[in-house]
Amino acid sequence: MQALTSKAKQVERKPMNFWEKLYLPAIFKGMGITFKHIFRKKPTINYPEKTRPFSPVFRGVQVLNRDEEGRERCTACGLCAVACPAEAITMEAAERLPGEEHLYREEKYAVKYEINMLRCIFCGLCEEACPKDAVYLSETIVPSNYSRKTFIYSKQEMLIPNPLTEPEAYAKARGLRPEKND
Amino acid sequence: MHVFLTIDWVLIIEKAILISIIIAVSLIVAMYETWAERKVAAVIQDRRGPNRAGPMGLFQPLADGLKLFMKEEIVPNLSNKFLFILGPGIAMLTAMMTSAVVPWGGHLILFGKNVYLQIADVNIGILYIFGVVSMGVYGVMIGGWASNNKFSLLAAIRGASQIISYELAMGLILIAVLMLTGSLSLRTIVEQQLDGTYYVFYQPVGFIIFLICAFAECNRTPFDLSEAESELNMGYHQEYSSMKLGFFLFAEYVNMFISSAVMATIFWGGYDIPILNDYLFGIHHGQNLLALLEVICLFMKISVFIFFFMWVRWTIPRFRYDQLMNLGWKALIPLAILNMLITGFVVLYKQYGL
Image (cartoon, rainbow over all chains, first blue to last red):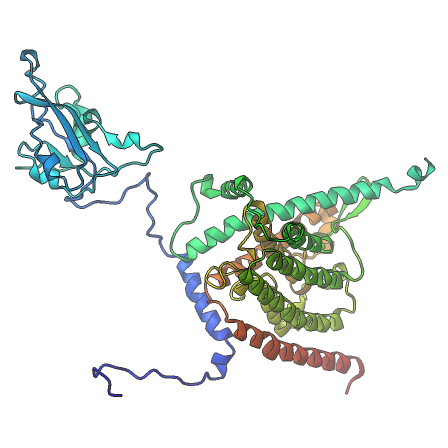
């Protein structure tokens, strides 16, 4: 039968020579190799004490943004919920009352904003869809838990700390991510 | 009433304490051998091994043992209930019984009495070990047969045939050693090696063959055909769950420990400390300290052997069944017989000239 390509190599099937038939020299050579592996540096990272460096576009848990004056950016427009392929985002809108101008940017805001982390596939389409630059995906990985209910993250868990009232927490949360410019 | 005064209570109490200590030590060593196995496997495979359960993962065996106790005991419906429970029991029993004749140290001097650190110094020491190891085959066979599972039975038969084939080569090596020592008692064998002339230098081929046979006896890679996960579905301990499975696995580790102890005793001088002259040390620094150091020395030798067992496990792939039988019958037994003939020739030559 003719070979299909010219790269086919005939397998050598020589009978074993004396040293190979003993098995022991080959075994000792193999044992030397495994012994050397004991002293190599291990690539394992001791999570959660150490974390591995992520790229700048890593998609982790969602974070709801605030602007420089500490007001929430999200206006409950629903574009992220429509864009989400897994239908993980739900929200409820409400009207801003006259005394709450320092809390919310525009007249409509999200009273309840929930993302079901068990449905979220971390694709980042909600981040791309948001017109107000309110949702973005941070570097945090979803921690594990014992019950399914705790995986529905509410607005309070995802909101970034207020830069005016809690500057250190805000700086720490920001520090994981470089400033987004658009 | 009068018979109570004639019983030697001191001896009974001394032996009872010795037995409990040795059984406890065997079990603890077997437990930490599971930890060592995982750690050694990890460092050879470029990863870290268990390091969460305690410092460096030292409580991991406790967690494993607790897990095995807590699991559900599944007994197959059509299995033979009595034999099903007996299988792991025999495996564990024969594994622990061999530790009775191994000399663990010199002698202590407690309350003016010489306490030998050996449970039973029978003068057929090696033969006893051999007999008990042969009984270990029962554990494997009964375990496989009582499971009412064709594949377990096949694996058990393979395992049993492997064990008895390699026992023959072991026995022939022991004959050669016997020609040199003249006694079967393990304590005498160690005492003859006390001046640093270990029998491994007189019988190097014998040692290598004995080592290979020890691998086969413990069902250890490369001979673990009967318990491999990809061959015959987990082998003879497939139908076992919870502590019965734990007993089978544990019996394998205790067997490893005891085989290392026997190899260290016969070929590497047992509790002899290679760098010191034991007798003079005992006179200068006291016999008890010497006994303690000798026990530590024996355990270090055993640790080296156990590390070697594990090192080989993660290096070599498994043997196929026919390759295994080939090696046992057609390669090791002729080599062992040749070794025996040459040893006999040399011994007679030294005694009588040519």
